Length: 109
Image (cartoon, rainbow, N blue to C red; front, top):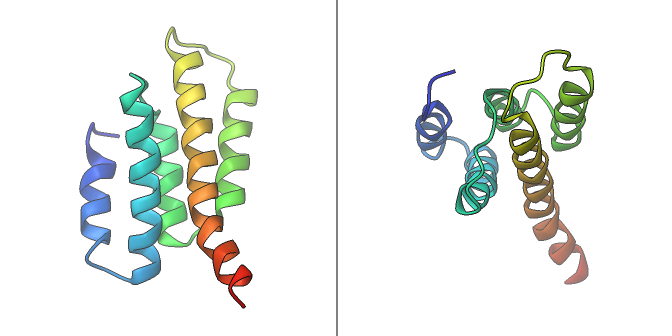
């Protein structure tokens, strides 16, 4: 996957359906927070995020796919540990951002 692909994809989605825009914003925030720490997410995370944004999988499925990806990976690359950290943190942050507004709404009833 090309560098910057997800960012371009997120920008296109931002003009689309509200739920997709919201998900794209959450992923962009989560990935950006990793970049602030000097971490870069993997291509696999970017593809998984796209699938979640498009509605093909849930956020919990995305998190499980990322976990399984690193558990089953047989060939290790030098930066895998940092990418794994960034991928898992991005998915966890996205989950929190996705669930938090729903919790706030339920508390206001």
